[in-house]
Image (cartoon, rainbow, N blue to C red; front, side):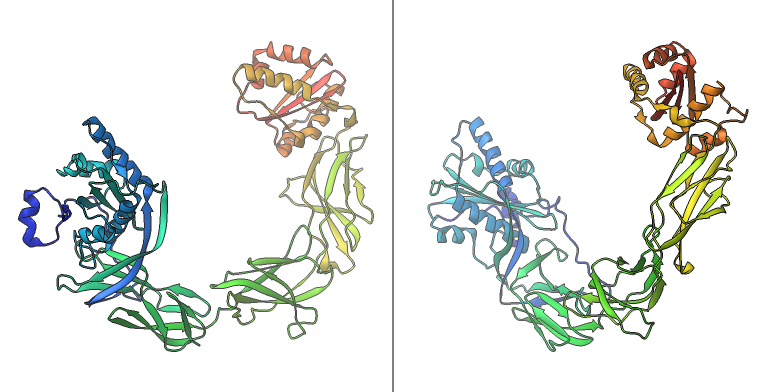
Amino acid sequence: MNLKQKLFRSVLLLLIVLLFAVPVSAEMLGDMVLPEVTVEESAPALESAATGTLDFTIYGTYDYYRARNLTTKLNNQRTARGLSTFTMDPTLTNLAMQRAAELAVYYSSTRPDGTTTDDMMNAAGYSNGGAYHLFGGPSTAADAAANIFNNDSIYWCDSSYRSIGVGCYRQDNGTWFWAVIYYTDVVNSGSVPTSAQSKTNIPISLKDAYGDPYLVGFDGTAMYLNAGKSSKVSMYVVNQELGDNYIVYLSGGFTLQTSNKSIASVSGQTVTGVSAGTATIKIVFGDITYSVPYKVSAAVTAPKVTVTNDAATGKIKLSWNKVSNATKYKIYRSKTGNTGTFSLINTVTGTSTINKNAVAGQKYYYYVVAVTANGKTSAKSNVVSRMCDLARPDVSITLTNAGKPKLTWNAVSGATKYQIFRSKTGKDGTFSRIYTVTGTSYTNTNAANYTVYYYKVKAVASNTNANSAFSVKDVISSTAFNVHNGVANKTIITQINNKRANAGVPALTWDSANLMAAKIRAAEIKNKFSTNRPNGTSTDALYTAYGVQYEMILGGSTSAATMVDYVMGRYDLSKVCLDASFTRAVAVRNGSYWAILFR
């Protein structure tokens, strides 16, 4: 018994299609997004009419998950009507998956090879009678079910059909095709996969069954290559039932030939540029042969190199532009000038490197070569030169018991002395050299009390051209008192945070960067309790330097709990403690005096 067909191709059968509500028209495909053929302007697509039979493969996804979901939705409706549910037949499902994929190439009730779905089923041993429904467009099982229910299909509710095969095929361009096959007997009740499966070689046999030539094409976007670069050739067929711009790319079925493998080689569907020149690539697909010239450019270009010193280490740092097709870069070095003997010192995949074994005081010369994946190399880059510097000192700063700034730093290898620079006008202000020492510390004994100073240190080599970069700039304020009697107190910050939590305000974090500023102020208010510094000057310069936004000074108790109770009892002070705009704080107690700094 022949299958009851759901789709018809011939325009002559249009009246019959309408009479039986068997949609094959664009209406059924109205929601489908059809990809246009787009190629680079410099390499237009080539398209030809073909006859005979073409055997090829396509790729896409067999979505068993959606297929099973559609079966469930059909069974739910059958149950609601008192009918037995379909058994999902894995053999029928595989046939349906094949038919769904074939619709992408040839949207018709007839298969691309000119046979019918009946023929396919008979060949698989399903010859006692069945029906099928083919359609495209829906991307979900729910929409697919609606398509079946809304198109007068009666097979899903026909009690004579007991098994079902559902095919759901998705192209990489996002277009979906469905095939539903109904059968009267349960032949195979085995298991059906539960998830989507990517397919790369779905077989298709396409013939001009109705005497109409079909269109095949070559997407010629890869007609220009650099040596060492590969490009995949893309062949397609046109599904003319859906419109001349609806194309399906092939995963196999055509072959490539090259006229000169020393210029361009071929492997599978890929063309690789080998050396400069032009080679003709033949693309053979059925009775169609394209001869496409591939122009291969010369090997990768040479990188452009710049050189500087790494500020922290003083080592020489090379940087260059990314070179097209390069997968790595070789770095060569010489000590004897541009025309001296260069040796390979490193190979990297990035676009910069630091010459870590360079010796301070030595001048070096460098060039870089780009290398492709297949071993092709660029010409030498420009030669650059640079002297390796000393590493910069790592400086820390504190105050002596007399309140004077004291700087200490690590010994720098190769340094003969150290220069100390100072500014009173900020980190970006004017610095003057105030002293030179051979050791690793310096106390600024002539610093004026209550003055904010900025310091930086430079390591000096016997060859002064190799002096280090400046250390990171440090700030501190001198004072007239011993700040080290002050003790950091996190307890009071914790208790303030408890109050903030009760008010729904985020907690403050401990601001260790401003600990010295808090020690300075705690020592000063112990001597003279005032919002100004002991000499009557404002704290603005101090707090601007440290980034402090609010100072809270307290006195009278050594108990953190007592001070917090006092603060929370005052509206102005409690408002500060509960201010959500403050995120960091530090506290120092000196005797019974407290300095709490917020920002």
